[in-house]
Amino acid sequence: MPEGGIAMTEASLTRTWKVTLLTPLHLGDGVKLQYNVDYMVQNGSIEVIDFDGLAEQLADTPQAINDLSKSIRLDQIVRDYKLTVPHLYTMKSTAGSSPKEIRSFLKNAYGEPYLAGSSLKGAIHTALWTGLDRTGLPRQRAANEKDYKAGFKKAVEHMGGKDPYHMFIRPLQISDSMGVVAQGNIVCEEIKFFNLQSGDAPGWKDFQTRKTIDDFKNAIGMHVETLRAGTELILQAHIDKLLAEDAVRDAAGITRCEEVTDFDRMAARIQAHSKYIAEREKAFFGRYHTASRDKAPIQSVVGFYEDLIQAIEKTSQNRGAFILRLAWGSGWRGMTGDWIGDEDMAFLREKGYVKLGKEGVEIFPKTRRLAIDPKNNTPSLPLGWVLVEPVEARSFRLKPIATMQQTATVEEPSAIAVKPQTPLTTQPEPPPAPIDPEVERQEQLERFQQRIQRATAFQAEVEHMIRVVQQTADHWLKREMAALLVKKAQSLPNKAYAKAQKDGKRWAKMIDELIREVP
Image 1 (cartoon, rainbow, N blue to C red):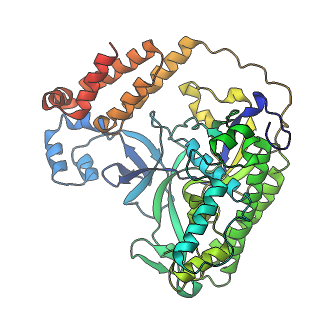
Image 2 (image 1 turned 45 degrees about the vertical axis):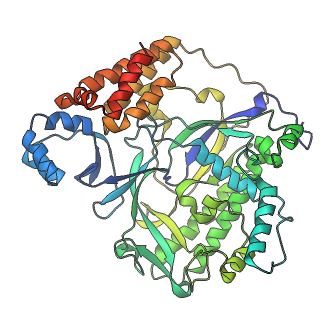
Image 3 (image 1 turned 135 degrees about the vertical axis):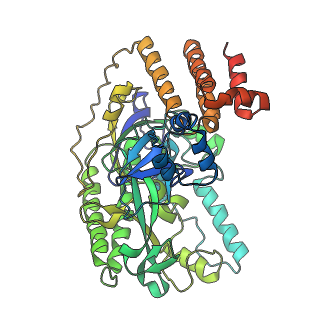
């Protein structure tokens, strides 16, 4: 039994969470979409191109292929040859002009954006870390850099664990969320970078000139795909009962954090950390309100954090619910663990033990990423703030394709409001309605077929799709999915599959091996 006398039951070990985005969220997949290559801009809307569909049209117009090979603009070729370019999805843009490059959002094998469980777990790890006992950290300044860093390293490993196998967060397991359709939920956001200059003068980073300027309207930001505020995602969290036992943790050398073994205590600690972050960010922007030439966005950010603090306090009344900041918008502290205190950070920078920040700027970190708020058209929405609430377990299951749109709601970002939550019953939940295995089979097969049809570059995505087939336990379903994949390969224009087999291309070999593996 964990410390504190809290007995764990099977029901208490698993929670289904609904994650509601309070502000836009960007979770990158490492891909940078290029203008006139991966997407086109039509009537102010960004269309992400379906390359397989485009290839079928180009097969009938060989001269267009020759023009493309000469680096002629894709939109010009579309006009000249009167092509109809199929697209995977379209999205609105908050940018003032057509972006040259867009950082793509993470998507699953079906082309649907989703929240990776590892991202949420990392944010929770940061929040819980700040609640650990820090009295063991070195207080006296060591004589040299080596001794100081060695003392910190040893103390930090003792607190949080020396590697992932010994970290206190290990008993917590979080699944990836179910995906949502990209159409209508993905937005291209121009993210503006609020940046401090020498002497702590506020400004905005211009990615075109690589300089910090005074007016955000003239500063070119970074363009990213985001899930819009109001989107709802469903996932599950589980506490490993064995790893949560005191004796097992001690024997395995897993460091201690009692909040990891109880969802309600975990939520309370996260709430405390989120309120601390919100108050800290409010103070940061409040410091530059009067000094900034663009007062409107700074004032709006301060107002956002005032509303957020109230929302955090209100959420604390709902059992097991919490507000958290995660992913790309959480900044340096959020991504690195936020475990170095202000005093120690100042000492490390002063002594030159770490190369962080900019010389002449006292504050670190000195940059904040902000999305455009449509209410006032100013960069005043911090990214990545979410509300996490426990819901019925039956919410987490494969949904039919026709209802996938219902897993996300579209709302304009507004003053943060937390809806009242129905108190969780202590009675066991009734078992979910039985699912017809044949219906579920057909749903999975149809979704896989749609994924194949939406593949932006089939040859490049073959390995990922083959992995999906191989991980399918149902033999009938695996055989049908493999057949769809082979059929798609055989239908590629210009006999691309046969030529690739003859030339020994890797992607063709992988399909051939799959055929032998799944007869």
